Every structure is written in structure tokens, then in C-alpha cells.
Image 1 (cartoon, rainbow over the protein chains, first blue to last red):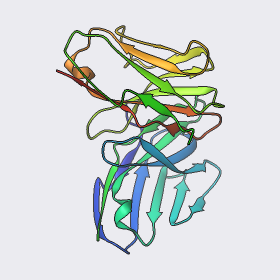
Image 2 (tube, rainbow over the protein chains, first blue to last red):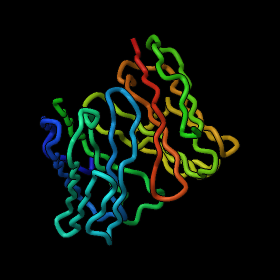
Image 3 (spheres, rainbow over the protein chains, first blue to last red):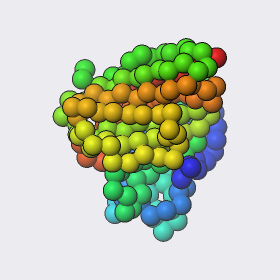
Image 4 (tube, one colour):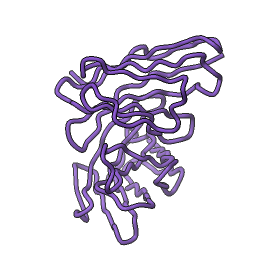
Length: 113
Length: 111
């Protein structure tokens, strides 16, 4: 079953604009991770935010986490055509012994040159 | 680059045939995961190994599926008597802590 739900399902922006993607989840978590997947390929890890963290930055990426609302957002600033991909949030449930990840359905981001 | 590798990258088979996929994790990682991803969906957890021990299996893993990690290094996932519903991308991931690193996946098409 899918734990997370990303919003929107699809996003189309112009190169240089910022892209904001949201994720909601259902159960308490240890951490939340964002991944990128280019068409037909494997997943690339972008960033991990722990349940006791509220915001994290990595390059052009900014992730926020609101555990009271069970939601996270991923902001990509100054987008590039190469950012075109599907983005997934994945959660590691609190109390889980094996750190398996539960993914949402993903957001398709298109960045127009 | 010593990332996670998977073989083969693509597999086309006829219904009823057996297939086996291989995953080579990052060498120092003791945790290994298999996931399955169908079109338009996120990956779904199948099974987890810590070293050579298979510690968790999803209900998605029917009796036709078996996974091994005999020496705590590479892992294999076998599907017996394949069905069209098995068509999917099979992803392997490894980790030593919280972050899971994924391989490129094996895309299975069952005709």
C-alpha cells in the first residue's frame, strides 16, 4: 500500500522558475526521503530529513517537514530542463524494524527550456 | 563507481517461464531491499535482507517468488511460472544506515 501522496500529480514550469512539490503521509515516521527518477530508470536519492528536523537544504533543494500535519514539501529553485523527472517521497515508519520505505505515487515535473 | 548494480536490465519472457534477477549492492552495505514498481506507481517493498538473513517479506511476495542472499553480498530474486501481472520494474536497494541507494532496476515484460 502507498503511504504517501504527492501533490500535484503533475507540474509543468518554465526553466528558471521554482518548483514546489508536496507530500502527505499517514503514520508516524523516523525519517522522510525524496527521490528522483528519470524515465524508465532507477531512483536517485536527493535528501533525507529526520522526524526531529523541520528544514533541510542541499544545493538548489529545500525540504521542509511538518510532523503535526504529516506533510513535507520539496522546493527546487532555479529549475533546469535536466530537473525534468518524477519525484517521490518515501517514509520510514516509526517502530519499523527494517527501515523499509513506503513510497507515494510520485509527481511528474516537466521543466520547459 | 561502485553503486548498486542489477542484471539484466531488461528481461522479456513468456508466461509460465522462470526468471532470475541479480543485485550487487554497495560493498560495505549490510542491508539489501527488493522493491517492485509498476507503471505510474511508486515502488512497493517486497523483501529485506540483513547480511544473509531474510528478515521481512511483503504479502506481495507470493509463493512463486523467492529471494536469496547466500553470502551476505549479492542477492537473487527468482520468479517461477511467471504471469502477465508480474510485468514490472524490479528495483534493488542497499544501505548501511538510513539512506537507501537504488540500482537501475530490471524491467520484466511477461508476454
